[in-house]
Length: 215
Image (tube, rainbow, N blue to C red):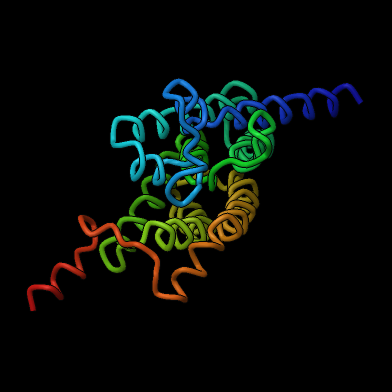
């Protein structure tokens, strides 16, 4: 019972850390609530579009750092179920922050912070998938969905090729599948705009679009 209580307290602490939403905390200092601006999302992309690059950088740093702290401090060393559980709790806190009326961001930066803590190699793989999707389609939401969905497959590849410890496979698969489903849910509005053809594109990263424009 004591072990269970300690685990639950760690998971709760990770959720509370995740609830410290970077966009909303920095927005309070600036006197704005970015949930009333742009897409209404309290995350890095909307922060960039509505508040500028410096503000967005601060948001991303906070949202990545809180997950890293949750995993390393509360989850402990190694890629264990407790470590990834604390990471997922932080992601949930970011999406549904208790300090901000349970209206937060989409969880992508906090997911990246968890990967930074448990496996920088997986983080590099996920960022690589995201970058390829951005160059092909130019849609941040689509890139985030596909990169998150690729996480379980990347974990399998890593273990089979000896890049990741076999003992980490179960926790990483569980974390990857849970995060992929959550990111898909949080990006449902993006999916609706994609179907309607109204989803904005990041033209600076949309390499295929620039090549078509020159053709």
